[in-house]
Image (cartoon, one colour):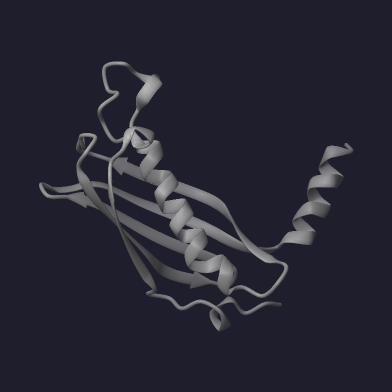
Length: 135
């Protein structure tokens, strides 16, 4: 069995800074909120960052897949604002990776999240996909 701790280390963290653009807003989901950072954009930033933190370090044939997500988006952020996201690999439990995220801007924290990813063999995943598709 693959020992994930040989490839990634608990406590690793990445901080992302970006300016909220139109692609990061609620957009067409709500015309009343189209100038605000969307929760989906926060989630996408965290997932993308978690994948980039881990997947390139794994041996060939292994990837991570998302298993669990929990988020609180507790303050609005306007388009054009500079925001920061800190993503931390808090725990490695066998093939389970537990991440936390905090998002903040000049006025303080606006979101928190927890995310679990699982390290798997890509070929075995695709075998299960094909098996399930033929049922």
